[in-house]
Image (cartoon, rainbow, N blue to C red; front, top):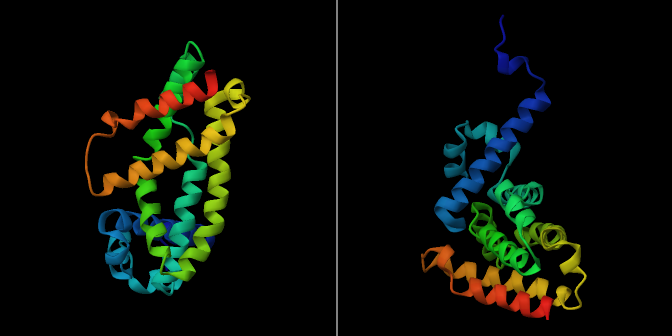
Length: 208
């Protein structure tokens, strides 16, 4: 009896690969179909595997989407700042220009697929206690990581300014709220009118 290359790999590796495929498929379905229309059948089809194999990993939709919530947040935590943004921030000629580039970079993160997949789960968690219980601690960890990422982007000089700590959540929460309006009002994020206001608020608070 011969074995295929896939079967010759350790069971733990195959299990991890299957789990990752299922979770990636769940995120794809959340983005494409929304929480209400995402089902175990649609996730199974997207993952391209048998129902028995998927149910072995995740016996219920609730368990699967709780795992998907963690999968999304872990991916966000691990995601590095894209190289072009790092270069633009490093090339900024002064604190005012650095603020402008960092605000642009932060705003760009709210256009990422992971933000919209997470949003589907945030909204659903209002009436899904199990989902809310999974999201709450993950959100706290993600929040701490986001503050650390923002500190890194702004740099020690700006972080040390007296009003930096209150400005940081104002920028983040304002961007998140504005980004949500794009769900029903599709437009070009690059022309968002509030971009210049966010930059001006940060400059005024941190440089005067």
